Amino acid sequence: MRKVILLRYGEIHLKGRNRSFFEKLLIDNINNSLKDIKCKVKRISGRYLITDFEDKDYNKITDKVRKIFGLTSLSCAWEIETNQAEIEKQSLLFFDHIIKTIKSDEFTFKVSVKRSDKNFPFHSDKFSAHLGGIVLEKYKKLKVNLSKPEIEFTVEIRDNGFTYILMEKINCVGGMPVGSAGQGLLMLSGGIDSPVAGYLMAKRGLTLNAVHFFSFPYTSMQAKDKVIKLAQLLSDYAGNIRIFMVPFTKIQEQIHTKCDDKYMITIMRRFMFKIAENICEKYNINAIITGENLGQVASQTIESITVFNSILSNVPVLRPVISFDKSEIIQIAKNINTYETSILPYEDCCTIFLPQNPIIKPNIEKVKKQESKLEFNALIENAMENIDIIHTK
Ligand code: ATP
Ligand code: MG
Image (tube, rainbow, N blue to C red):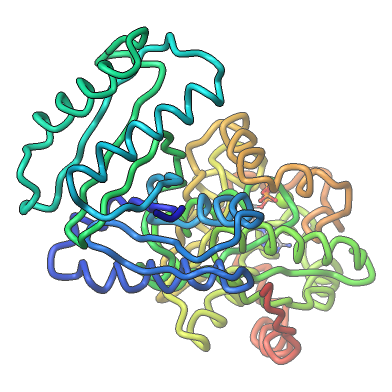
């Protein structure tokens, strides 16, 4: 008998012929996440198994595994050889252990058997009732409660010759394995919304890259470090993130000196999108991701979004938090541990040269007229040439 961690996965069951691709990707992601911890990971039909770890690493492993997209739940389990006498003996020992641990033999329980080994002679329901009977015979004060048991005791008889006995199921994050849906470029500011947007798209299987625009010396080095920290926090879920750091000072200065102030934000955002698209094309990235949210600030109107999109030729923009209330975004940010970093006070480049009365519903012709005063292409080329690339892992 040995202690193992059993991992369950969800939606990838549905993927028909692609199933083995998803399963392979998921095991690669699990191995990657656990690469600094001594343990082994393998696939058995319908489950993954972590074995050969030291007890002291158990919490570290479950903390990491809980955050892997594609996994739905995990359980600490005892692995025993599949034979009826052994399962009965170990089940009784298990109850013995529970009774000693909680110092009571008067709780309600339910036995759930899941049999995927069709050579095992009992049907699941029959064997559940049989095991329950044996337990009741030995521990007379226990009671069965099938709808709301205090202890649910699960016996999974898998088709690899082993049976897994366990009590507790811990939820994992769900979603699809990172890397199963292509590459995304997250426009990552230091705010609350964009890290949440990145998390949500990684959850649907996109590999994350990030782009951050900074305007040194108007924005500080701390602002840049904050963004790196946010990307590192996202990496717990999304694996390594490649960050493109784009110098934005010259662009902002030129807009500020040559264009009507009212258009500052609109034009600046169009530069950001165009540079993001150039990065996507150069590095084979399929989509841009932003934390935009309809109506949250002046620049986030449907008219503004239309004018931003019109600078792009080929790359789609995904805006997963477009319809969320701020409180819903904050709740996710807290759950994924980015909130505390996001609210650190360092300025983002969006907050410099801010006009008193920004255009809320821009008109594309007027925007283009303002942009004609700028060395648009040269500024973009210059920014592209001076990008710094940083990896989070
Ligand atoms: P966030 O909380 O993500 O900063 P926000 O509510 O402050 O969003 P804006 O400042 O209008 O809204 O930014 C909208 C989106 O534009 C951000 O979610 C992000 O995707 C992108 N963005 C803004 N500033 C930057 C930046 N300096 N670098 C990269 N992307 C940015
Ligand atoms: Mg912001």
